[in-house]
Amino acid sequence: MKRVVITGAGTINALGHSVPDTFEAMREGRCGIGELDFRDVDRLTIKIGGQVHGFEAEGRFNRQQMTLYDRFTQFTLTAAKEAIEQAGIEFIGDDAARSGVVLGTAGGGVSTWDDNYRSVYEDGKNRVHPFVVPKLMNNAAASHVSMEYNLKGPSFTVSTACASSNHAMAQAFAMVRSGMAPAMVTGGSESMLCFGGVKAWEGLRVMSKDACRPFSANRNGMVQGEGAGVFVFEEYEHARKRGAEILCEVVGYAMSSDASDIVMPSKQGAARAMAGALADAGINRDEVGYINAHGTGTAANDKTECAAVADVFGPHADNLMISSTKSMHGHLIGGTGAVELLACIMALRDGVIAPTIGYEEPDPECALDVVPNVAREAQIDVALSNAFAFGGLNAVLALRRV
Image (tube, rainbow, N blue to C red; front, side, top):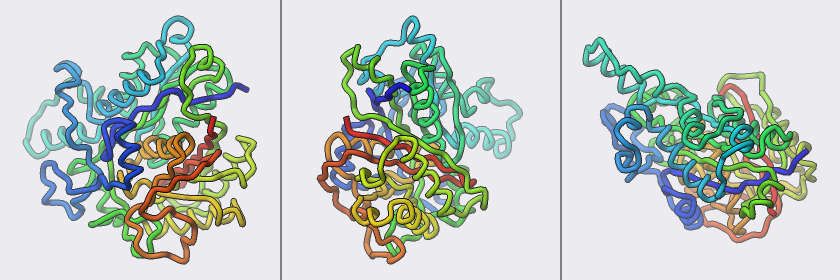
């Protein structure tokens, strides 16, 4: 079994267009959630979200690329560029042949679906652009990253709703750990903030009209976000030989299925995933200092997740820190685990724990240290990143300081 380290990280989200910008916003407890700005937003009941502003695709991509890249692919390529440049890795020869791309997304090209449904149904057009299908397909982003960086090994997309990124990164980790690939580009992206994307989520009645307040007694629902997080997972000796800077080590993962309900979370399923990640990593539960929670801000998720943490960690649950950065950047659905992994890297590397902002009122059913409202300096050695999806699909990653 090989050791696996992260040598590059890239992002674009409502908090920032790069990793340093995002870290700064997390340290400051800044909120990236605000009023949505797109066509027909006035027809929506929910008018807030973690929208990416000031992103000019036209300056980054040429006209031909623009016809092929949905917004979720644009986000992915932007984050991938930052991650691969930081890693300083070039994919040539055997490295190119064996390294690949595994990315997560729940919806893929939702904006492309939305625009073209309008065109056909509302405007009465009988033809769509020939590139509509390659633009909207869920694997478009992974394919374009593969082509851009000459990644010829295992490449595909995972779609498991809110756990997509964590499932994708778990797969990439397993491939590097087993020796199948020397490096993998992995993470996830999402761009559902368009009329149809938000309207569909409104139907679930789980959205907040004013703010995302995870673990707070007065929480009233989740808030959608958008963006991407992309990482270079690399075999430790391969990274050392290149003299690469190591951000942290990925040491384990686990996945579980609740097998119970299509939308309601299960304490047992979440607990199995966390306990499984500890077992896979060979980590004692008392070593864990921080958990980046799934923490959606819904009544059901937050209390269920806290109960699962209490079950897995026993008395140590009172000593560890747990926070939800969704309070700042919103819920990126299939891309959320990737952006949230950044909070784990910041905790391990910089000793800064991102806060749960919007916390106003303690909830006896969420009686853990949720790092309320203000970031905290703390030296930790091990962090977990949780993702618990609709459909009852769970994926947890374990990371260690190097």
